[in-house]
Image (cartoon, rainbow, N blue to C red; front, side, top):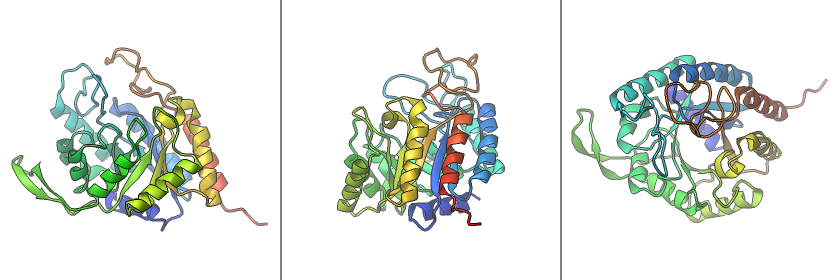
Amino acid sequence: MIAQWRQELRSILQGQSEKILLIVGPCSIHDTESALHYAEKLKELADTVGESFFIVMRAYLEKARTGNGWRGLLWDPELNGSGDCSKGIFLARQFLLKLVELGVPSGMEFVDPLASHFLSDLITWGCVGARSVQSPLHRYMTSGLPMPVGFKNRTDGNIEIAIQAAAVAKKPHTLLDINADGRLCLRHSSGNMFPHIVLRGSEKGENFSAASLQATRSMLDLFEMPPYLIVDTSHGNSGKDFRRQPHIFSALVEDIRKGTSPVRGIMMESFLEEGSIASQPISKTLRAHISITDPCLDFAQTAACIKKGHYSLAPPVHI
C-alpha cells in the first residue's frame, strides 16, 4: 500500500495525475488516540473527495525547535522532559502502522537523520523543514530515502537554499550511517528522484502569489530542477493566523482549476479542535484533541473548505 501511495504521489508531482496532493493534519502528534480519531475522520473525507485530491495525513513525530521546547512524541512521549526515546519509537511505529491499517498515507518531517531508520519504511511523503534545510547531513539523508521529500524555504524567506538542497539530494552520495545491526557503516545512496520545494512563507510575508511562484519556477529552471511545488497555507503564508488557511487554500485551488498555477500540492495544519495550547506548560493534563504546538483549524472547517474545493474542481454536469 505504501509503495502504491508513493507512486500516486510521484504521478501528481510529475503532472501525470490531475489530482492535487493535500498534506493535512495536526502540527504535531502528542496523543496517538486522538490522532487516530482524526485519521478516521480524514479517511472518510479522503474517500469523498478522492477524485480531486490525494490526501496524506501530517504525522509529525519530531519537532525542530529554534530554541528550547518539546521535541515531539518520538523524543518525549511522556511530555515531561524524561526523554524516553525507546518508548517514543515504539509508539511512533505503532501509530504509523495503524494509519496504514486505516488506509491513511502519512507524511512527516525528518529532524534527526538517525531516527529516519526507525520510521521511513512507513512514510509516504517526507519533509526537511525550514530549520534543517541548510544542513548537509539532511540533504545526504534525503538522497537515500525511498519517498518523495519536500524541502521548505528558510524562515527568512530564502528559497534558493531549499532548491540547492533538493539538487544535492537528487544526486548519489556516500555517507556515514548506522546499519541494521546498529553498527557504524558507510552507506552509498542512489539519490532521491523526487525532491521538491515547499513554500511556507517567511517572517517577511507570503510566497504563494503568482509573482512569487513564477520567481521560484525561474530559479528551479536555473538549477535544472523540475517545477514540483507545494504551498504550506500556514506559517509565514498565513501571517501565523491559522484562520486564514481556508482562504489561501481556496485561492490556490481556483488558480489550479484555471490552469494558471504550477502548484501540485497544498499543506494545511488541522486537528480535531481549533487553536492551540502552546502557551501553557506541556503536561499530560492537556486536552488531547487540541494542538500543543502551532494552532490548527478544527476538522469541521477543514472538511468544509476541502469539499468546497472538490466541488469547484468537479466537471460540470450536462443535462
